[in-house]
Length: 319
Ligand SMILES: Cc1cc2nc3c(=O)[nH]c(=O)nc-3n(C[C@H](O)[C@H](O)[C@H](O)COP(=O)(O)OP(=O)(O)OC[C@H]3O[C@@H](n4cnc5c(N)ncnc54)[C@H](O)[C@@H]3O)c2cc1C
Image (cartoon, rainbow, N blue to C red):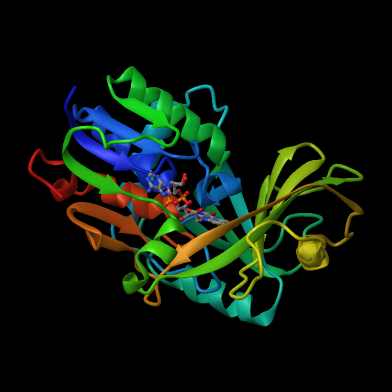
């Protein structure tokens, strides 16, 4: 069978476009030698947060992307097993954050509802930001749903070291950290990130999503996922306990009465980024007839969604 598009890589960068293009009527095949979410995408559970960073800035087209994202969620995950909308509170835990949040609230914000307010009971810090919509995403679960929807739409997801690339009119690749060794000319770099799944001794006050520097998402009454580190230098890509105290301290300092914490799991992944922090979308240096998407950095969900929606990327002649 001939496909319209062969997509290399079953992470966010591959499966999100695969899902969108399947919905648009294209016949898609996704290949990955290792597995669905085998790279950075599967290493974390996260927040899709339009107001991230110390100085959250308005982004062009964000309203459309967030709306489209919400529609996909409705279609792909009506039972809310993999992604749920949450309200996020970002307490300003230091003067730098307070200044950034005040500036953000003073700007026009195109898409997210964002307002400055004092912390809710039990949460430390000065005035901070309430933000919505924000999605709390169990990434591996959502990727599995996207893969299932691609197959249900007539496409294929092939896992394992294959031989020949499947016959297809166009080729698209999102192969994550594999670009670092194989396409050094792209000048991309790796930033390691680690998360922890933790249990607190009691049910903590406040909303289910908090972010000062770093973020925390409640996944059960007394369980949270907290992250992340930004390690520009590291000796291996797996999790290591040297970052425990940094991550736990940052989480505990969000609360007026800091909780006792037990670590249940450690996760790590590598974000591939560019100096400009803009992803690369263009010819693959190793295979110029193929399009490569790389360097999604820490905004994988937003950038992959934007790419998939671009008219030039989903028209029959596109890419
Ligand atoms: C700790 C941490 C926290 C993060 N938090 C957020 C967040 O809150 N929000 C957000 O949007 N993003 C976040 N990110 C960033 C996000 O993880 C990445 O932007 C995204 O996962 C990159 O997706 P990708 O599909 O390009 O790469 P990957 O997920 O790395 O997938 C690449 C896939 O390609 C496969 N592959 C490799 N070589 C080949 C080949 N030759 N042929 C076929 N397949 C191949 C691999 O097996 C892998 O499955 C975070 C990242 C980390 C590490």
